[in-house]
Image (cartoon, rainbow, N blue to C red; front, top):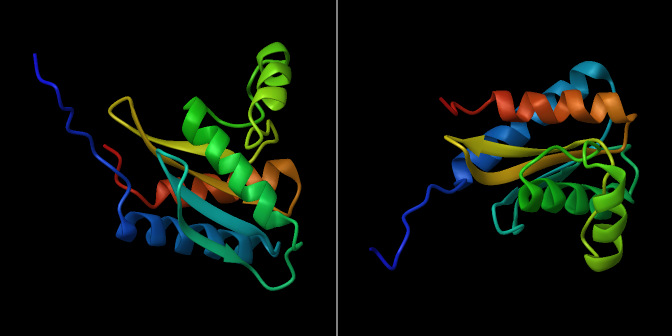
Length: 136
């Protein structure tokens, strides 16, 4: 049995492409937001705070992205009981809609998160970022 594991990771080009598509979608919708992309370990890979977006978006985006990457599921969808425990145990945990994991072949490569608009729009903008990647 091997002592090492080869995994795919979200690269610079993918992170920047996701960022570009998400920002373009936010512009199309007329809503300035913060957008952040993290790798599977929660490390920030790309980030933009659009002109007019709330300054608080940075902290919220980073928490949403890390939560989606660590949990491997969209933020806002985590059941209340585990969410309550996790919010006390992990300072980076947040269960607000707008964080989506980037998954390929069942493996979490990272996550994208959006904050600064209403929850549904944050999700739509994040989905546009993920749609930019060829995850097939």
